Length: 77
Image (cartoon, rainbow, N blue to C red; front, side, top):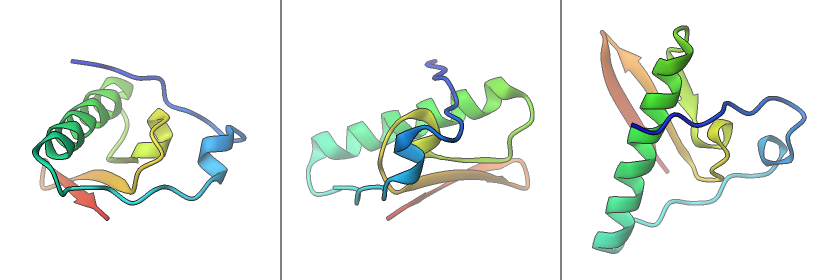
């Protein structure tokens, strides 16, 4: 479990365009799965989140997670 700090405005990463996610190799898939786990852990640690984007934990990638009916859903672009 890795809980990362939630960034707030005006942190520069929040103003930058997030990067595309590479899913072309087994290593990149492992990296994205780890990122999603860190995002869930960080969001749940706040106690009041229902979704979070990767840049909010300092990772400039086009990944968001949310909870729908109490189950986590990741969206990758």
